[in-house]
Structures are given as structure tokens and as C-alpha cells.
View 1: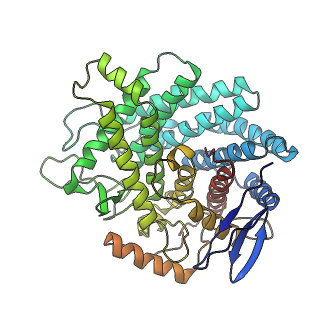
View 2 (view 1 turned 60 degrees about the horizontal axis):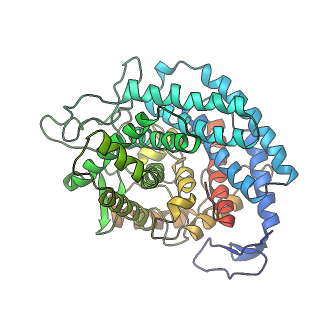
View 3 (view 1 turned 90 degrees about the vertical axis):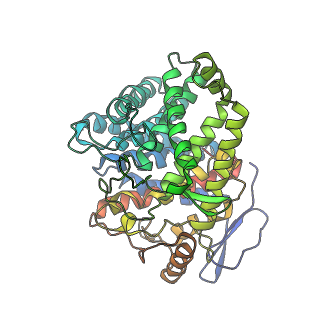
Length: 466
């Protein structure tokens, strides 16, 4: 096996590359960590995840298991023949069987539309995992869950098929099927529909699955919705922090008479709010669209949808947006002090009202930053930041059971980061602690963030990523 060299940075000082391993630097001590030790970390992290993963929360269960599957993909690619990997595969298979029972036990009409995006994307990764270990019947069930249940639910229940929303028509609402709350067209539900559609379409191309143009159609619709918003610079949905760097805000807002984008509840909006998870999923959605630009160009021409569409102009725009968002993440969501990836400091993400939903964004962001096809387009390098984040997560774990913590960064450095973000963004809250009273939820989500970080690090060993 080719043994690679790595550096983990958790402070201002950089450790030196070494032959046969990487350096893990923390609290003024330096420990040499070999690939075998990284393997031990992975085993310990997964064993703990097995004891906390099945908390009864629908969206978190979908998202955290997607973290597990991404981690497993990296482990399988790096150590395919190791007996412990075979054992992990059997555990994941059993967990997926249990997850299918859990999914079928819920009343979908009471859930938010974005919940089905999380499960749909996870189900696609479950299918790939199950096919890889020779479980085609269960794999087919997860494909059906992704397409016939999750994607169709979002298309039929949440997508705005009307044309009168201003300033940008269509988009996807984050409401429920009963209509008790119509929901808002926030970024997360829209980027999930975008990503789920592009992911399904790419899978249908790989597996020669027919009747797939509806997925390309929806991915294109979501691309148009986002791109039209991004071009309306006065609303700052894509908020620039320099001429070539920016981040996507938590939702588009446009305050004028007749606007369809003024809603401040479900969830409660706070000014300037930006979420790390949105950035990661947006990058992957854009990368997906770049890979299918030829199919998209042919489909648009065959259906006379846009006579001015030029696939090269389209591709250049996609690449531009990827670099803008990648630069924004590097500048605003990475600490200048310790190089660790952080969540933007907003009470809405950490506080007791809706903070239950957003702290996992750091893991989601690393999940997609670690994808090789995204990484190749960013124009900036996150490898050391991902390693520094993974190192911090590992070092601050509960050493008695290898449970990762929600807060894994230094409090003083956090305050310096908040000041860094505020100077760039213009607004921030002095918040760093996840204020959830649900201890079991905290255990599951925190462990999944660690799996995302480790998965991204392991993926860099071979350069394959997700």
C-alpha cells in the first residue's frame, strides 16, 4: 500500500511533513500519526456511532447516516480488504435495514419538505453502498425510496409550479403536505431539490435507467432559480465579501410591494444568516451540472427550451460560481487563527429555537469539500483545514468512549473567529455553544460531524473523495 504524508494543523505553527506518516500537532505537543493510527481512529469513531446513530429524529437520521455512508465509502476505497472493513459493512447493512423500517413508519404529511431531500440523497448513497457489497434487492428499495418517495414528494408537494412569484418565479417551499404551514423558499430545501435531482440524473446515466429526463428538467429548473437570484445583486442572496468571493445566504429576501420573498418564519429568519451546509450542497449541485452539460445542451435544444443556451457559456458561469463560493468559504468559514472550519456565528444556527437543525452544517460542508470532483474546481485548497478540523475533533473527544463533542475549538480562538467573520460579513452573534437540551441528539450529530471530517481526510489519501 502506498503510504502518504499528511499534516494536521491546529494552531499557528505548522508541523513538518515526515516520511511514513503525518504530524498531529496540538497543545504544544507533537505526535506522529501513521496511517495505521488513522485506521484506529476510524474504527473507534464508527464503533461509537453504532451506539448513538438511531435517535428518533427524521431529518437528522437521514443526514447523519449520509455522513456514515460517505465515511464508509472512503474507508472501503482506502482499506478494501481489511477484515474490520468487512465487519463495518455488515453493521451498516443492518443499520440500513432498520432505517428502511423507520422511514416507512413516519407520517410524511407532518414533516418538512427538506426532510425528504436529506433522505433521498442518503438513499442514493445507500444504493451505491449496497450494490458494492452485493445486496441488489435492498439497493433497489433505496433507489425507490429516493425517486418514487422522496423526489416525487418534493416535486408534488413543495415545488412552486406557479409563475407569479416575484422577483423570481418557481422554487421549492419548505412546508408540509397538510398545508398547516406553506413554508419558505429557503436555500436548504431548494438546494436539496437541486442536488437530489442532479444526483438521480447522474445515477440514471451510469446505470442506463430510462425515463430520466424529468430529473434533468428539475435540476435545470433549480439551476435557473438560483442563477436568476444570484444575478439580482441588490438582494445579496449570493452575498459578496470581495469582488470574487461570496456565500449563499440562508434564504432570498426581497422587500417590495408584491414580493413573494418576505416571509421571516418557518424557520424564524435572522438578518445575514448563512449556513455552512448550504454552501457544500451548492458546490456539489453545481459540479453535477458541469458533468452533464452536454446532455443538458442536447435536451434544451430538443425541447426548444432556450434558443440562446450555450453550453460553454453555461459551463463558464458554473465554474465562476464554484470559485466564488469556494473562496467565500475559505475566507469566511475558516479561522485565520487555527485553520479550523467553523459554522458562521448566528444565534439562529446555535440557539434553542432552531439551533437543533443547523450545527451539523460543518460536517455537511466537509462532506462535499472532500469530494474530488468539487475539490478540482474550487481554485482553493481545503486539505489542511479539513485535517486541522478532524484533528481538533479527535483531540477533544471523550476518551472513555470516543464520543465527539459539539464544541471542539478553543473558546478564545472562537471569539477571534467571530470578530473575523463580523468584519467580513458585517453582522455576527457572540455564540459558539450548541444550545440543545436533547443529549441523545447531540451525541448522534456530533459523532456524524466527526465521521464527515474523517471521511474527507481518508478520501484525500487516494484522491478519490466521495
